[in-house]
Image (cartoon, rainbow, N blue to C red; front, side, top):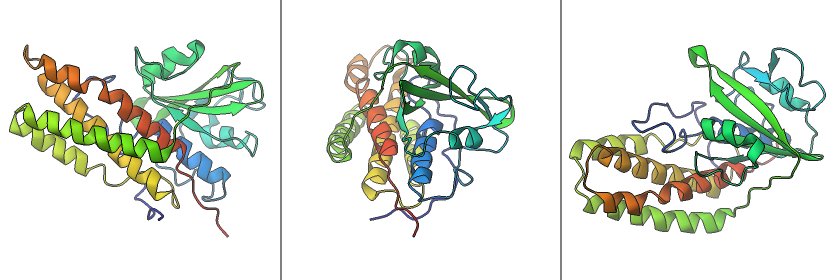
Length: 264
């Protein structure tokens, strides 16, 4: 089953939670990784339709020894086109205290952004992280670590795990009697996750895993934000806090393995 071509719009920012409680939904690095892989597989024509890539978004590759990346004001699409044809991207979604397997040299910037695109090359791995600039523009920074970083994850097993955790999270939140207004706000945000910004031809299983993982993260983060200023509900926090890591992992696996069929 293939996903129908989505509206080319990423989920709007502005979750009412601390910026590192969860990653941005859907994360720019995750979307870029999926579209980059689809491009290299021949499923899309470059990154022109990728919803997180703008022609004027700057790229800083000065810290990486990739030919051509030291050019000033290099656009992201042009930079990525200089990589080998066989290059494949994956995404990790680290936060402070949970580096998600990233090597130390790139952890601070990636954890600060909550996301990073990983592209293994000869002799190591390039990590590309986004930061927001003025007027909604994204600045993309490249770093390099002299080791191969290979995030692991199987879509099938991750889907089963996320569905179980999602059921658990809903039951915990429903038993916590949170304010009804908070519940309605969460429902609206979950409804906004219906369109997953993956490229055309993405695997249906990856789309469903991304949607379920994002739903889990949203439910958990909204519930934690709801009780953040109250002294009680320590049990709720203890039950839900570990689920954020599982949601981020599921989201990373989904976008790293979205696939995409080559055009004939």
